[in-house]
Structures are given as structure tokens and as C-alpha cells.
Length: 210
Image (tube, rainbow, N blue to C red; front, side, top):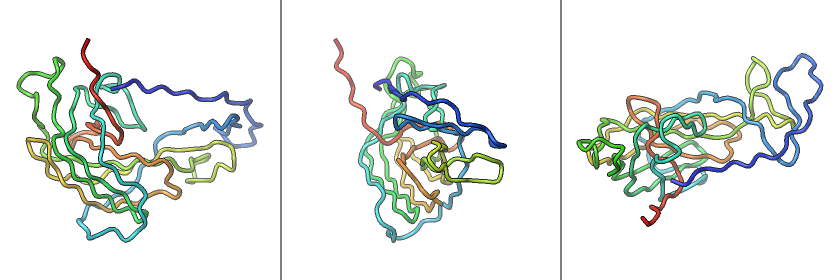
């Protein structure tokens, strides 16, 4: 997987503190991200989406290379072993309806993976995570708008588990409570037994071997 490169613009001098902690002035369009805020989820199966489309996608990248193990994306750690992704068909609507059908999310055929695990999924369930950027907290009373101060938080909403086959197939259909606003959403597939991701919305093409 290509290494993610982050180019954050210069952060300006800190504003005068008057009883508030963690408020910064941001210049050059940069955004300062504060912590992960928990979200709510309901995984009951529902009908067709009633809200407007936020995103639809047919591609996810499996965890690999620089994203393995200790690397955290939006507060979610990647699995310690590389995974492959087969087919993906997913959508998220403004009412929080998440639909995600995946096949072939399995351990990669990679020297890092023990031979007996290659090409299979060893989890009984997969969960989905909807991750949004939203207004961050600047005190202990709850969410507050940043009012131009760059206070941006990450909110991750985990669904309940959905059955997953040994071949890495699963159909996930859940209602989640989206924060307001929900900016730049991304979707993870994570283990049913621990909070580590196997795949995330994006793309990944194998580089040709020399």
C-alpha cells in the first residue's frame, strides 16, 4: 500500500487562553484534529435508504505495508498482518443507513502471514466503522463549534457484528447515528473480536515486481 503522506500547513501562533484549553489559531487552511469521540450504532437490518446519498463505493484497500499494526488511521489501528479485498459494494446515506457487501476479505498471500492463514478469514464476524470529522470539543461539556479556531474532532461509529464466512464474505446493513456535521466520511471493515481494521475505503493496486 502506498505510504500516506501528510502535508499540514503552518499552524499560527496560539491565541490568548481565557479559561479554555486547546484552542489554536489555524492558518493556511490547516486543521488541528482533537481525539476520537465515540458514536452510537444500531445494527438492525432495514429497508432501502430514505436519506440522500452521502457516498457510494465499490473499492476498498486492504491493510498492508505502512498501515500494519501500530499505524492508526482516524483512531483505528490496522491489523498486524496484511489482508486482501475481493469485491465491495457499499453506500452511506444522510439518515445513517450503511449498506456494505464484501467478498474476499482474507489474509494476504504474503510471507508475513503464516501459511495456514493465507487466503482465509479467521473471524466469525465483521463490523463496519463509519468515521467522520466533526466539530471538536473545547471543554468538558460536550461538542462545541470551532468558530474558525480549527477545533476538529474525529467521531467513529462502530456497528454490531455481522456474520463473515471463511472466504471473507459478509453483508452488513446498519443504521448509525451520524454526527452533525459529518465531514469527509470513510468506512472501515474491522474484526468482530477487536478494534483493528482489515480494509478501508480507497484503492490499492499491486506494484509490479522488478
